[in-house]
Image (cartoon, rainbow, N blue to C red; front, side):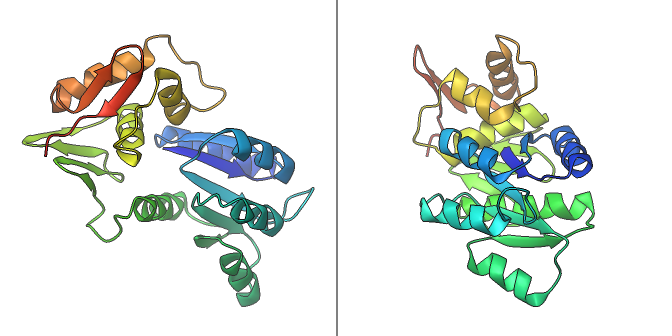
Length: 222
């Protein structure tokens, strides 16, 4: 799952990026609104974590720009501003959730999972994401396919989640690398193939289909 963190505080930004990466997210971090705008115009993210107090423009301005471009990426606001009007303003501008600083990492990750479930239209199903015979649990990284059950690594889970987000689409190797790795992470040339091999080993060869020379897609029999 690919996240964009927009946070100007270096200590908070570095700490959150590291923690989220260790939790299995592909977390990229920018420190101002202009950088966030350029990034969002050129890359796809599953969720945006947005600080309101940015140096070049307010987080609300960036949020209004985002929604004005009809980009529906879920947005979770992180801020120390705790007034009711601040919260109302953020939600009315298009935010999907609001978390006050300081916060526990466990709560942040729970809110991220909730927003991701909502974004794929699967809120309220005991935490599981489902497509035909395939089910994923974002909290535990458990996966089920037909009769097979397994615990996936963070990368394996992120790859399968990327395919589940767009079950009719074909994602290239480069697109999958973007979805499961952050900007500064080293990526082996055969990393995607290795992850897919491990997923098939755990859940069965039918779960992912390879279209030679094009990419990969979810192949889930009805």
